[in-house]
Image (cartoon, rainbow, N blue to C red; front, side, top):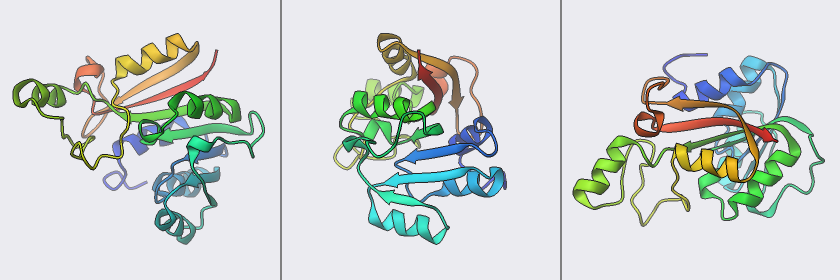
Length: 198
């Protein structure tokens, strides 16, 4: 795994997933993460993606990816058919977050959720001093062209899990160049959680 070419959130997920696992990636994009996991860890990879252009790029990498909208559910997959279901940088774009997470928890033994942290300090300062919707490296879009429907923080997600009785197995907090350990809700650009049904 070339250190510099892999995104920090992908490195985190790579370190979580065991070799040979069955993995479903919801909103897999161009398949960079699935390809890395397939090549380096020999996972049994499956992806679901809405963008046809991204699906073609996945197929070029030799990945098995189906065209689908994760908001429609995962009815074609039986319970616990995957060791991991990945929702990285796609949960905040879902229209029905509760439903999507419930479905992921149904078909996966564990679910990995990654999202940009809206409470990152630079985002807070931009909102405080400029009175404008934050634009950061993990939230690079302007308010009018962002794919994000939901803006959440690390604290918001932990609260959501507590309310829904979802167990948080581990939380990983990512900055520009590596892990964040001190005050992650303030200093992490992205968060990666491993969750399961309580």
